[in-house]
Image (cartoon, rainbow, N blue to C red):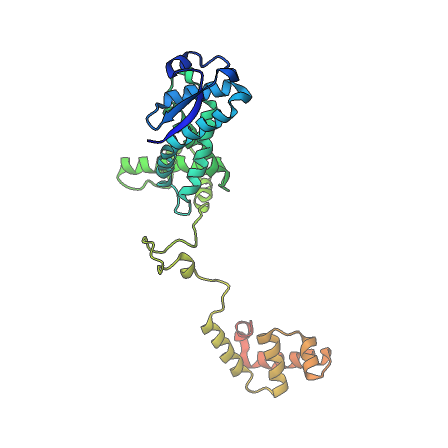
Length: 297
């Protein structure tokens, strides 16, 4: 069985009675602590070391570390419970890290004389520390989250009462809100959602599983079928043009060169290129009629 050396002013029962008195360096004695040592006795040692000031600094740190180790499973348990209600993008280790800060705050602020169990006290502090960390990373105002939760609870309650999803009017009357106000808050609540693009599309964690990033549509990408249609259409409407005229139209509309750049390639002035372009467009408008507005866009 592993043991740890800690300083104490006497046995546990005697130290508990003197926990509120300041202990001098000369009164601190070595006490062996095993895994079977009660947590209450550790608290007595912690209070003694804290009251001893600089003389008990080393003992204070050692006892605090022992308390942290003993309550680490509680931190992981609370973090795991909260993780079940959070998006998959949230990591368990991040919640545990935030919970450890709450545990340290609970150790510093715990008062043994109040007669409250430390497990009860620190559970609240751990959970609160994790929630504070989550709120600090949330880009949505807390008021919007509260309103969204209120609307969600009312929707679930009315669905249970009516046996169907309530209408917008019924939901607004239940919440005592105007239709426009309810619609606005529902839009704000629904628009604030975050998804990890690295998440797997399926539930399993197979390395070969498709990620959500792989199935998203790229609205900025070129549609190959449309580009082929545009190229064929451009070839069709410029078939009656001369080589120079066709070159100007293709470079201007398909490639995107300016009149000046086209003139440099053809050894013509910019004004001459503009003149040729105007003549060509005039002839094409006469040939294409009303459909010309949809062809060279």
